[in-house]
Length: 193
Image (cartoon, rainbow, N blue to C red; front, side, top):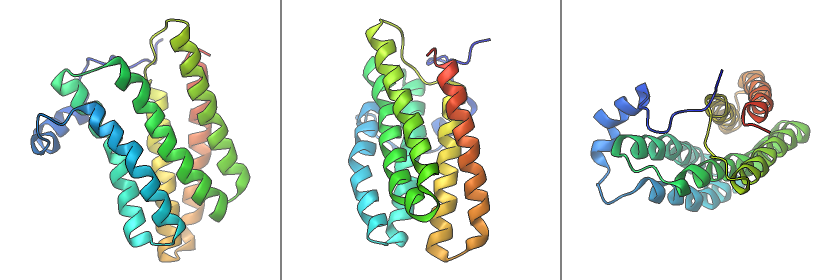
């Protein structure tokens, strides 16, 4: 059984995006430009969260994470898939998620949770580099994408908890991070390492 996603196959969210959000994105904006935007947004997200400006930082984090779904859908719908995008889109995701995890999860939950998540993300990046050097195709798989969504949800729940002072959300954030860690380990094995 293969877990790799066919980069040319449209998924239900691609069709939804094509009918809605992608109509608002000018044709001169490329999927790779959206990936670059995520790279550029990450330091601003970090600054706002570090400064405690959750009213601006949380929505900017959500927007930055949304660009992950947007660039992939744009590439598939517009048939603009590139080798650069298949390599750097996951790196942009890991840069955003790992840096926010180091800032927020380590600070508000526990360093072990944050360092485990970042360590696994690092292993996935190294695995991608090794695969690329071996001449193998580097692309996300379903488990890896599910892991990223779970990490995003965990971070968002934790940020909302800190922002609003709702400690009842902390167990949900921890459960999401535990699931994300399990998915990251599974992703390592399905990634071909």
